[in-house]
Image 1: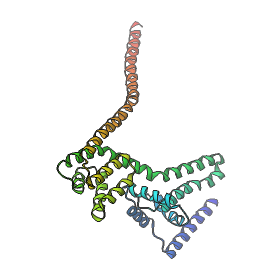
Image 2: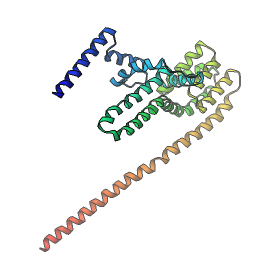
Image 3: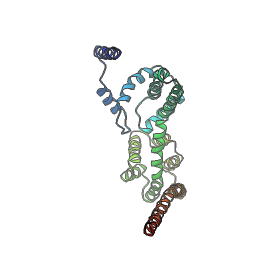
Length: 290
């Protein structure tokens, strides 16, 4: 009887929901996922849970207020990381996902109250993970771009010996750059064509907040102002090569601990092989004696 009542209540709630959705002309989950995929540019396929929480995040974003400095900083971070969401919507999305996890504390209080603090702790972790998603994506993108900067500076050093056309230098390097750096150079060259060269380079520098990229931008601005940037970029190329060597050494230092683990496993495999052979020979000899 109880199961029948629960089933009737679930079907009644589902029927009322579909009637209300049709009356209010709410979009379907498929339409919401398609809209979410159009908004995102990170390449990740949107999930059904994201589409479900997106409406709540949009409603919540209307009540979120930020000061102008924080909003401007987050807007630049989201733009550089490839998110087209507004800062309010991004914050509301993080809050909505954390609240969805926190709501599961209600059945936990009924079934297993000791699990409730763990669920609340997980909700806090989900919020901080979601709110830092743009910064983590930007950091990964910045690292990929900074790996190409030594080659970029070396190319500029060679190009300045025959030409001082900064736009031409950027367009020529863009053909051989990586995917992320090529996309950013596309934005930079388009900005340079539509506005001042110096202003475009300044905005390009501010997008990533990278010291290495700032040094390159200042050198290119100096070239635009008529300075002889050959010596500057030669010194900058030398410094970046040293930084690249330090980065490679730091990566190499992380490899030995991983190798030790596999070496230990290989040693254990050899020991087990020898011990199994010795044990087999001992058992065979004892069998021959009897």
